[in-house]
Image (cartoon, rainbow, N blue to C red; front, top):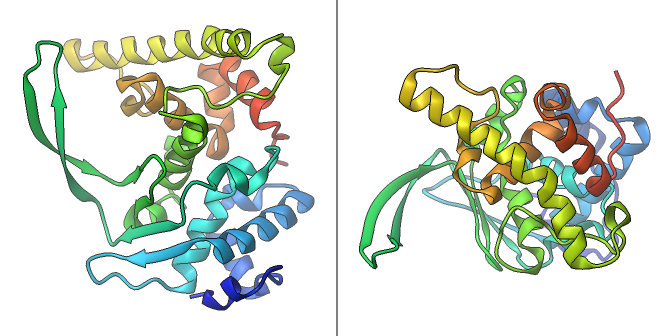
Length: 265
């Protein structure tokens, strides 16, 4: 499993056959320009050098598994200043064969503790590893129409967590959108993201409670601004046109942050 890369300071090019197979399986990667594909290939090799993959429940980490995850994980940082430094707070990636049941504990406003189980396809832990379901990673080759991509979702959380708890606003560069301070930049960010989040939340509530039309964007994003950011990032990178149709201002905001040229057609 590409373990030999970790012994090298400057990783060599990934094998042609393995890289081309990955592009074929995940069309949203193949649609990038030739220069972007080359950058993705380099970043994926560096990612494989620096991260450690672990299979859970007897799952075997193969070259196909590791490269599929690496190639999708580096897409959000393709044009971000700092590149893979956005993922510098962790090393481990734990891959399960399919979804897992996570045991949760929450405390409500009255101080009552609630215990419940949640089925998850992935999870990003603050300053900790990323967990992924291989079944869902593999499915991202055919779920782009729905804007679904578990790898991008979890690594978007990592970007959001780069300076603390995920809240839907990643660390913004100085002067973002012409602002003069970090406070102004956050305000400008949420001036766009918050209304988009509330629009999805309202549509999800109407669909659930009153039988209204289900939103196109995954209603999981209606849970919180942090989840909305991750869900919107999935769609932004795998089905930009659909996200643009529903949330044009949000796509402009993401363009300003991710600095990502549109995929070629």
